[in-house]
Length: 76
Image (cartoon, rainbow, N blue to C red; front, side, top):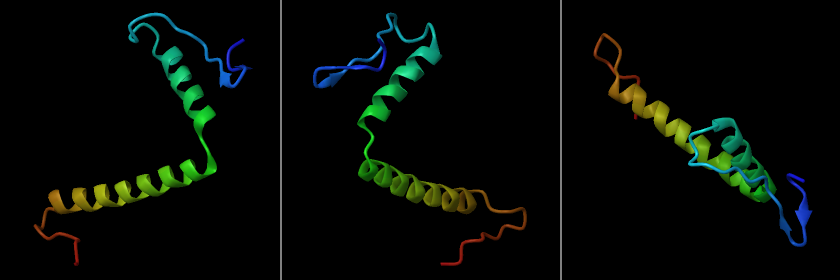
């Protein structure tokens, strides 16, 4: 059965193909593996990393694409 554990390792559904036949099946498989390995500590780390990346990306977009007046909103 998909998602059940046998022994010490969980058993995941198997999909055959090159990966471009059914995207939803492969997305489901990746998500199942990620969820089985996710821990509270790992989730906190991912949240922290994506927060920093989001802030850096917003700053970069504002800096690279200034408003029509030519002034940037960057103040420091």
